[in-house]
Each structure stands twice: as C-alpha cells, then as structure tokens.
Image 1: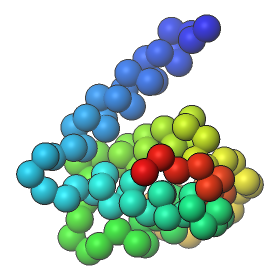
Image 2: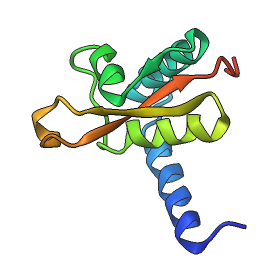
Image 3: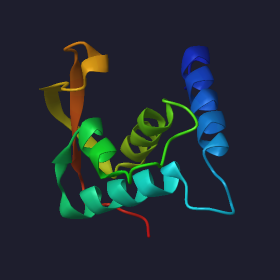
Image 4: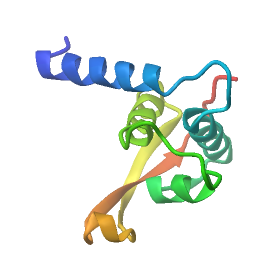
Length: 109
C-alpha cells in the first residue's frame, strides 16, 4: 500500500519526467536514460556525478530533479540497485554524500 507521501512523491516524479520530454529533439532525459541503460548492462557501479560527467556540454535539464527522478525510476524497475555511498565532489554539494548505484543487467530495450 502506498502512503499519501509516497504517492505525492511519485506524482511529482511523473510530472517532472513528463516535462523533461520533448518529442522534437534529443533531451537531457534521453541522454540520462541511455547512460543508465549502458551502466545497467555493464553492471557498473556509479554515482549521479558519473552520469553528469557523460552528459554532452550544453545539454541541460529543465529541472535539477530530472536526474534523481530517473535514478529512482530505474531503481524501482530493478535496473540499478543501491551499492553504497561516496563523498560528493561538486562544490554545490558542500561535502555531502552521494549514493553509489550498481547496474543489475536488467534493462528493457
């Protein structure tokens, strides 16, 4: 059973990802999905920072929540799983931690 808070979070994720979709061009979301698919196939360990490093220069999300939303969706699908923690290196994170994820090889193509 989903709690009200969980449902609100899921609704927010859906709205955020819907806004990240543009039918006429390759979007930030498309790049992230391709990277996550490859990491899952490779069973690679990664953090959000690893994903960000592979996004082409000039490709920006409409919201800073696109990447975390996609990671959550991919984890719920079972394509990636939590594997640990790593210190964040981006100054904007102020020394906090990022989750480390591991691809499971379960990718829907």
